[in-house]
Image (cartoon, rainbow, N blue to C red; front, side, top):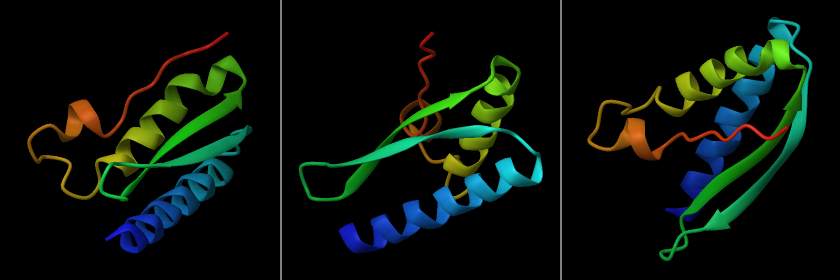
Length: 86
């Protein structure tokens, strides 16, 4: 399961980056992979952008985070969370 999750997250990250490029959004940053207790990874991102991209970037990340099984119980609450830092 950890390898499958890693591959899934990598594919999602590739799609998010491609979407930013298609929209000519200047977004950059880093990701951190952290294992859950069972070894399955979850990801943290620190991304930087001009303020004008902030809301659109959240929409893009959220849409990809919830694209697969986004209606399952708890998905909207637990799969995607943001915190703005200035």
